[in-house]
Image 1 (cartoon, one colour):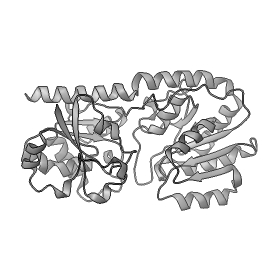
Image 2: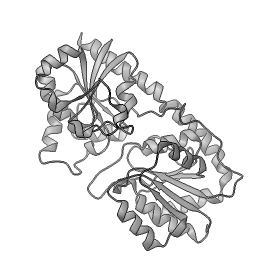
Image 3: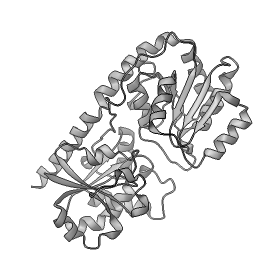
Length: 355
């Protein structure tokens, strides 16, 4: 069996573990830069290694019978270029969002990316939007293949939306950073509160903006209608999804230029039968067509988002149609098992072309 050496930012369940550990027909080594990035100890095993402890790449590759290098962000691809040059192994680099921008990047990042485009064999942006971005930067189109992130459809099972009920529970999930647009959603929620006094808004996520968002909730006087959970177990996440009536993702380009690919949380909501309202940001229109799988509004637009949420709450009958097509879309293009098979095929093609 062939082995892929993966390098990603940290070892935790949010970091696309299946794309590293469950690719059919391929064994793996899971690398992070140093031990402090080993975040979830339940994922530690004998296949986890630290890049800063590998002093002789040639010996490491030979000992572990490695066939392919796969970096899961552009900046990690740059880190692996010396490793690639010493071992002469093909390098695959996934492009996931911020790495296709100059947002908070170090000096010389663009030069490093262009060197990566020149020397790396293959680039796997997670949506067509990011593919266009890196090709605009000079990545050769023949080196680009879009590989969508997948959803485990066994874990996220479909249930019909709550059309007959009278609850109005709105849910959003994602890191508490500017590009997730939680602050925009909170302001939109405030605008509809007068017409929907029993509506609730729950946000699940951790991050740098937690204090800012809690202060905003106080400023807007959202009261008990608003909850922010920064750290909750996975079982409670599923419970909150089951209690929700509507899922909203207000993704937007951050002031520093940071962008999304396609948020996995939207895919998961669609898979489970939650009607969705989201934005035209980045790759999201590849997942949601307006008025087909859900509603799309302009990013960073409080008024449009409030109108869309209000429309959804007043027209629950449309949820059945939206959620039917949403689940169908996820099954067709974002099924984790299909995407892992596609990933295996990409490795097969790359290695076959080098033999």
